[in-house]
Structure formats: C-alpha cells, structure tokens
Length: 120
Image (cartoon, rainbow, N blue to C red):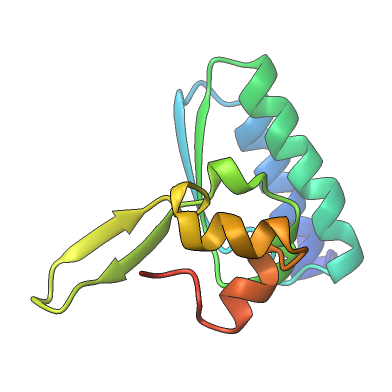
C-alpha cells in the first residue's frame, strides 16, 4: 500500500507518471527535489530532460535546491525575482555577460546562486 512508501518514493512515482503517462502538455513541478536524497536528484533530472526532449510536454520547475540547479543546463535556468518597484521579473542568467564571465572562470551556476550573484 502507498501508506508504506516514503514521501520521496511517492513523489518520484507521481513525477514519473506526470512526465511519461499523463495527458498534460504543460507540467508545473514545485520543488522536484523535495523529500529526495541528493544522489537521486541527478536521476530525476535525467528523467525530466528525457521527457522534455522525447515527449510533447513542456516542463516548468521551481526550486531553491542547488542539486536541481546543478543538473539543469545553464541555458534552461530562469531567475524569478521581485524588482525595486515590487513587480516580478524573469531573467536568463546565462545571457548575462557578468554571469558568462564567472562561468568561463569555472564558477558555475550553483556557486553564483548560493552566493546570491545571479540577479543583476
């Protein structure tokens, strides 16, 4: 029975169902790494990438988890924040010259995120 499975196991099963067996064309997943051991997040992100490339689904993830970010191509990352006027803004950090210079010097997206350096 499902009651005997861990929260992480139930979450992975639900995500696999959404990615491969649901009829939804757009899938929104909040905190995909929640309740998962960090070593499993890499496998989950491979499944997300596979579903995005091999199905007609468009997949949106929101996270604060650096392991999810670590396994996401820089060009797929969007930073959502509030600007000085209180409005939501969406940036593509990989398109920022400043971020590109850091990445060229082996400081990755995870390092920039944890140091709060992704936003302009």
